[in-house]
Length: 135
Image 1 (cartoon, rainbow, N blue to C red):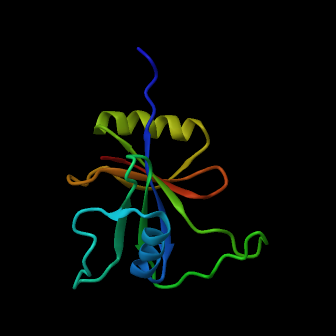
Image 2 (image 1 turned 120 degrees about the horizontal axis):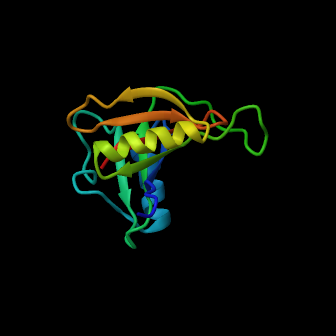
């Protein structure tokens, strides 16, 4: 049986204004919001998704309280983003956890007991966060 790999679903950008940044990329790329993300949420726009019309990798925007702007290409304040990867089920999540650790990742958060969205948050070898979850 061929080795199974997780699928890259979206790139998540942290931002202090998720709606404004999502709108920027929506207009820049000509993409659409995921269903339910196109209207202002009275509870707050803390997570927004844009879908790639070709079915490729999407973009998500996560609201954070503060975020120092990147000084890239300088190194004082690095770029801010993380990757979301999905697997089809909890068994595959366990396999990919073991693979990630074997490749040098560290587990930052184990939320595998969440019945709605089991997931792991990892730090890659350079310390950048990424998630693998059942999608």
